[in-house]
Image (tube, rainbow, N blue to C red; front, side, top):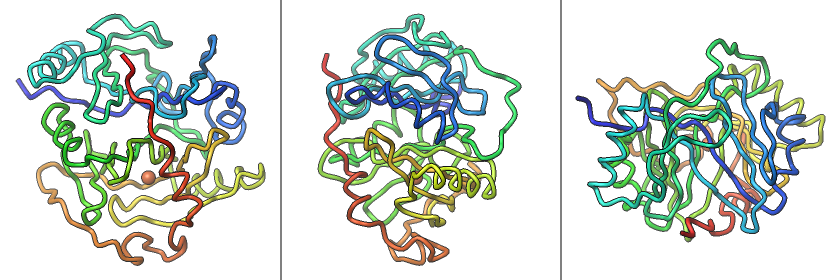
Length: 299
Ligand SMILES: [Fe+2]
């Protein structure tokens, strides 16, 4: 049997004081659809088949609630659960039916930075969801700030089955769980937090139209538009009403497992901003990307 591993990033759950009340930004400006609301939480879907990709929770502390990953099926879920347990990971809730919208079966563990990871299978899908122009179809990657990059990388590689796609010098590592160049990237930093969450649009034209809609709604691009070196994706960064950094992206490179060789990319302008359109990130967006220390799992 193939080693059990994460098959894709479903999405993310984020918390901040009254974050659930910022739904209008995500529906009217960002292009998501609210699929569920309950006391203190709101759930959103994109145009793709995932039941929901984002949930916003009313929390005292600002930051990640959990990362939401999929495995292929329930046999894979059980195998990955056992592998984590044997590998010494803390299981904070065992395999059980999920009571979040979309149902399914899952468990939760914590990574070396004390982030909660929810791993699930058999969650409802929208199987015939066609792309809609100028709105996101999925969350394609999340960049995580970490004070212990190597330890986190080891956990995601050895226990969750991620593979290294590329490095940005010794500052960032990009890791994948399927053909997308990266689903997670770790960025060396002083504390653990979410650097940004990237939403994929179908085409460059759709991305530009989406940016136009945001501009008309007085949501300025804070960095971009540009094209990154590692992953070759088009980027434009914004901030949401909770001060979280969100990205519109498209054209992430697709990795061939049989032939791909990770590279170490130099952090020079023509390789981080290939078109030369974005320039370096401002001190302001860097501050938003650093965020505040994640609350982490409290037990
Ligand atoms: Fe990104």
